[in-house]
Amino acid sequence: MKEMTFKAFALTNEIDLNKIAIHCGIPKKFTWEQPLILKGDILESILQHQVEESQQVLVFSFGSIVFINHSRPQAIIAFLRYIKTFEPEIDIANADRYSDDYSLHYGEKESFELTDEYVEVPEYEHFHPELISTVLAKSVAFEKVEEQLGKINDKLETVIERLEKGKLRIGNKELARTTAIILRYEYNSLAYIMILDKPDITWSSSHASEFYDKMLEFFELNDRYKILKNKTEFLHHIIEGFSTISHSIRGLFVEWIIVILIVIEVILTVLQIAGVLP
Image 1: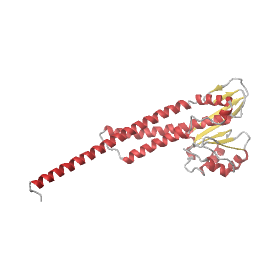
Image 2: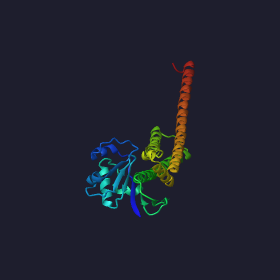
Image 3: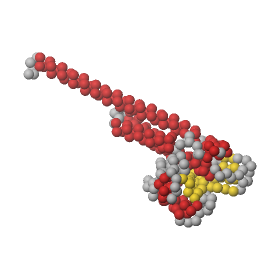
Image 4: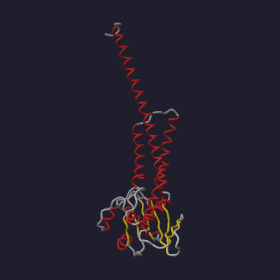
């Protein structure tokens, strides 16, 4: 049996692939759905040591990086330090926070098998590394945004507790800040990770498309996408509720001010008629 190993990290919300490509001398304009694949001489120049032909690193624009056949932790850290020169917010010390290990087995059995630790295929196909890496990259990126969802829920729970205590006023800045957090989360999770977008190779190869769909289904990426989308819509409803309450309170306050001013004006007019005031 032959084996290919994968290690995926979700490090940040976005990585500018074109900056890295320019630095590596790669004459190509990358769109955000294409991974930057580094191997051979280019990878050797980054790691400063010889690499095997099977070793690759795939960098995804939505902040994930996948190492193929890299068993040396020093090489992984060296590459992460290289990426950090382009994306300074990357926290190398906590790189394992959102990560996953996987492997591809081939050349031993005639059957296809998917498990939590490996996928086994009858024979190796050139599209296997990229498609496995893409699914792993999206999966660990989802882990990251799922945790961010928990933090947003904690923040909203604090606001709900204030409402339960009768503290109905919510500042415009606080509403705007909370809305921005939800929109950023929605952009990072539902738009930027591009769960619904399939790699280009799946459109030209039915075998690649079938393999990718099976991986996608096994890692439940579509189901996780739907859950996150529903939760995001629920967050929007909550914010709309907060906004309605806040605007109603402000409207009521303005109405009371108008009533008070009218009463004052009536009192002054009566006093003028009575001769109390000139």
